[in-house]
Image 1 (spheres, rainbow, N blue to C red):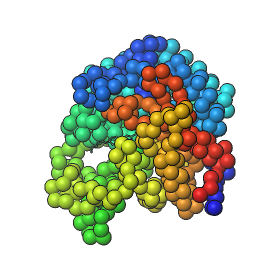
Image 2: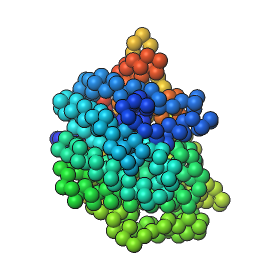
Image 3: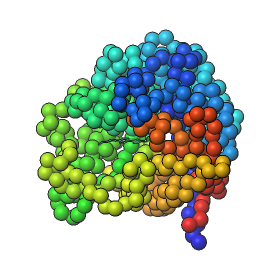
Image 4: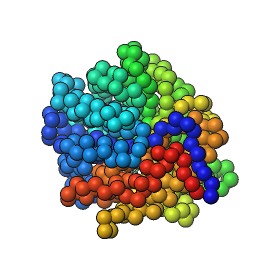
Length: 447
Ligand code: JJW
């Protein structure tokens, strides 16, 4: 038996997001978000599901904090719903919204759990979408004002801040591929939104510094590892283009102050160059204290003239797949971390999401999700290798504490360490909950 040991002080946590777990969408003064709207467009979300109730964590958060205590984790990544704090996005501050999150954060702190707060996890106030959404610079300014409101309300209580979750999903998945809210299909719009999101991120980091807020701030992009199908130059180039769309398109501006040249050429060729204003790139590249990384899967890609966006196609390499259909590719975890460390230097990293969709349910009160334990075990082995090689990873958050609303997949896809019965809202820790709790409490595990 071998021991996989993590560094002293390594932070273990779980992650959730407001729209996916809270419910209570018309309580406490909350305003509507783009996901409330999107869920009501027929065909957009599996089974016509929506976040109206979700896991009812708005009312049941003390029980959820109890689950975190039972796990023995040191940190909780959660998100604040902008429409709860400023219901129309840029108008009056809603004191009930701030109170809800103050009670939640105080509960975490009383339980000895460090809050990691995501400011934006996809639930844009609908009123701002009605005025152009992220395509409009006025939304950028409204976001900075919302962030400042929350910084001031939680200064000294919340010391880890994430500006944006997965800007690729917010821009391209939601406004080019049309899979997520608001469901547009326009490459120029998506490129402009991707740019404005980066500007909003940079301006928020600047405001955080100007206010002298205690703690550290970062961003949490999603990354998919892309491997070339062969050593043929055209396959390597195709894989580079695919990976750049997920990784470099967002990280180069933050760490290098410019877009990756060959991708900028590609967007120019598509007539979708983002509108960059003077000073934008200096703002976007405002130094961050840490980089969040959301990793789930990897793909094998080869050159395919006319295929996809980049004359490429995904090759089915026979990897096992989770129940949502994503390949299980643990080696990609180590490789993408090496790639990021090599390209961007020694930035502190937190794995802000890693987890798997397996839809096991309870049998006689127990959920035997061995496949999730295997997924986590394999990925933590790869993470340990990345750390041993010098990548400065300081913490790891499983997606997710609870089964929850998985966006366009609705409640059909389960990522939780805890099973949620959506009829009764009863929580049942799965076998993976106990396995991960042991890892978190011992900072190591056996293989
Ligand atoms: C890509 C679907 C066609 C979430 C995607 C769909 C079709 C080309 C998990 N991360 O719920 C990526 N998640 O809220 C944040 N990460 O394309 C948290 N990425 O593409 C989790 C979904 C995702 C995706 C979902």
